[in-house]
Every structure is written in C-alpha cells, then in structure tokens.
Image 1 (tube, rainbow, N blue to C red):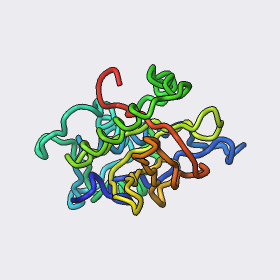
Image 2: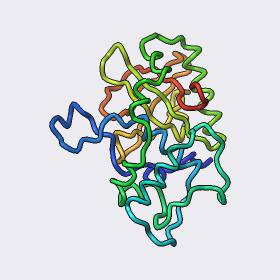
Image 3: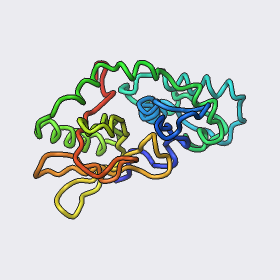
Image 4: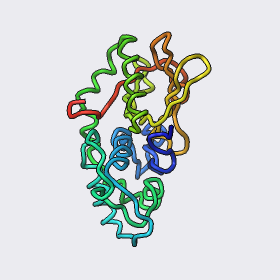
Length: 226
C-alpha cells in the first residue's frame, strides 16, 4: 500500500525553527508547526501542481497558498478539476523551496493554533484505551490514503508539545506498529513513533530534538471542533 503522501515531495522544504536554538535570529520562523502540518494536508486535498504552466509572481503564489490553506483540513478532497492549480512547479516541496517567502506569507492562522481549545488535553494523563483508539483510528485513515495530524507531548517533561503529520506505518519486530510522520521542525527526515499494543502507549522512537521515551498522542483537525 502506498503512503498517504510522500516525504520530500508532498511536504514543505523549509523548517519551523526553534526559538531556543535560534535566539536573536532576525527572520526567525517559529511557532508555525501546527499550521505547517495542517498545510500539508490542505495542499494534499485541495491543490494540484502543473509544472508545465508558466510561473507567476511572488504575490500571486502567496495568494494561491493563502487560498489553499484557508480551507478546512477535514473537508473531503476536491476532484482534480476543482483543485487550486499551482503553476510552474511539480510538488509542494519544490514550490516551497523556490517560493519560500511567498508560501510562508500565504500560511494561515498561527495565533489561533496557540488557543486551539483541544490543547488542554496535554496536561492530563490519558488511559491506554484512549491511546489505543488513536492508533486504531490512525491506521484506518492511513489505509484510506489520508494522513493524520497528531498533537504529541511528553509533559510533565518540558520537551515536547508539538504536532506531526502521520503518513505511513509499518509493523515492527515486536508486534507493535511504527508510525512514520512528517515533522515541521525537520524537513530532511521523517519522525518515527512506535505504538506498543501490550502497554497501549506510544514511544518517541525518533522525534526531532526529543529523547526516546513514552509520549501521548491526540488526533487534530479531523472535524470542526477537533
């Protein structure tokens, strides 16, 4: 089964930058992780790329990116004929690499992701049944060709309060499942988060700038209130 999206093709070429690691940087692009992960889904569902068409101005590309990312990510994918056409580029990665400033300008709503009402979930321990449900629902979505955005945390350890976009999975050698995810903080390599069905918990096998250990995951942006 093919993955829902392809890393390095259907993902952004630039990174959401860490404030703590880039202190004093004048053009810091930080706190956009939720918007970027959501944006990959929006481009996947509502845009198509036409590399044979003439390229546009930076302002026109910013407006196209804004149009794509203004659509609710839980809406059904548009048919090809109704999608927003991005001319002059073959993929989101190529588009965001060459038109980085325009794409960044076209992204929507960083402020409201900080106030998203479901963020409160990170402060509470969650039962194994809830984490098992996240794993099960994610597998169902991936089998249907749909990437799944997760809110991930290892609070009370102050290290991980973040989002990733899961796009593929594979069984591991111990009866668990490894979920493969796009991390907005790392455009060069995917994250790997393992679900252990025996313990009914997730592990940050490889999450950018995060130590290996137990984490909690929650689905995001799959309905108007979630």
